Amino acid sequence: MKHKTALILEGGAMRGLYSAGILDAFMENNINIDVIYGVSAGALFGLNYKSHQIGRALRYNLKYANEKNYMGLYSLITTGNIMNEEFCFKKLVYELDKLDFETYKNNPVDFYAVVTNLQTGKPEYIKIDDAQKDMEYFRASGSMPFVSKPVKINDKLYLDGAISDAVPFKKALETNYEKIIVILTRPLGYRKKKSYLPYRLFYGKFPKLVETAKNSYKKYNETMDLIEKYESENKIIVLRPSKLIKVKRIEKDKTKLQSIYDLGVSDCMRKIEQIKTFLHVTN
Image 1 (cartoon, helix red, strand yellow):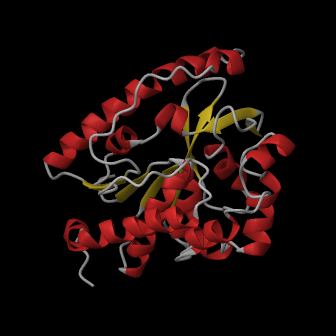
Image 2 (tube, helix red, strand yellow):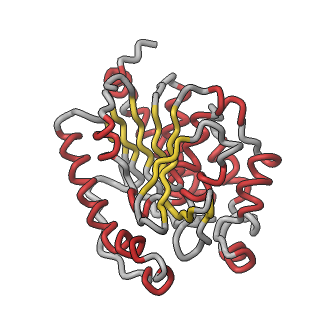
């Protein structure tokens, strides 16, 4: 199947606006991708590439950053989800800043949202051709543990895809794509430390999930080592923040949100000719 270009989008909550900036620059420069793997915020912001809505991710995050019913402590206390299901996945996408479901559906890009199955502890890569029909998978991919209720779909329970496969680079290698671009939301050299979050206390009924979560930092660091190896051999393109902008997972500071998005645009534009050459873009 060695004929497609794959794009991998790391999550990171509001750090994902870095990726949104890059994707908007891609669209403005006619950078076309065949397959996208979006994890957590990478899925939630990345779907705007398939619906071809330049600026949408930044626009609604700036507009509703301080709306109590969007995301944050108020939503967590009142609904059990830090991201308000009613506001984020219904009111926002259907009324306030409509997702272009038709363009999404007709765009030939294959979009996979990565989710974590609580029972198996393993990642699942859900191909979403119809965002309107399968919006729950996007919600599941971005449902952060401890601050989100598990999302039930077809009798399966799911949480954030980042628990089991934060950057599905190995999945892309196994699928044997011809070209791979990776968008990370952490600077070069970042590695995760062992987590001591109380997974067993919260998710004791799901021992395989607990085991996966316990070892997720190892998988992440091994993936970063592999990505940097392939990058040094000029086999892939990697885009990552060229400088550190401290952004909280649920960031309310609009200046910081704009800054991380702008950094994505500028980092992309610095590499735009390299990207075009890599993908054989002639226009």
